[in-house]
Image (cartoon, rainbow, N blue to C red; front, side):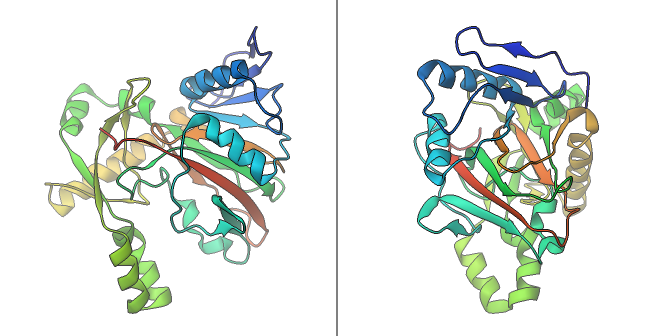
Length: 290
């Protein structure tokens, strides 16, 4: 995950970029997200976002209003909330807190945000407010590079396949066990399954990207259960190779900003019983994955 290129500086905006790995990810310096960004800075950040797929910022003590304002530079609408609690007074912000329940958090598994929806989110901006020292890293993988790393016959095979994403099937057993059949039934009624291509095309870069994840992808349409499981397990093992990864160590007021159309991520659940509090704004996409 090393051997990244040296830092570079944007001549117009003065923004400094430090690539973190050859796969994806860059730390962005000399930009203050608590201030209104000028057009040149926004343009540069949009270019960096597409190039590196996940951007990291340090020491950004954002208010909720500033957090929302930054995220809205990259889309016109905030993603409708899912199952994560919202911040009081700010329905645009998801409040992600882990404390005494950290050891059983579902955030430990690989996922791309909101793929259980017909139109998953475009990107996410995550702001760390309280973090365990030296623990609770998050890891991202480059799903375009993972696609490119497959053999040509496997690429061709996957291009014709569709996956069923069903949060009830993947997480439902835990809901049933913890809350009982009535809560499970409400979960089922409010969360229908959706279908997405296993290989999607990024609408801006035109890269082909793997688009499956173990937290929300239930099965491959048209294949038998054993066939589906074998293919998905192979893809999960492949996409999470270290060569496709970047790992970020959180500090208070760090910000991560990533492209959900071409990445997957997971939190490292190694900090129980410490407390971690994050605020996340997700920007809605405009079209279904194709």
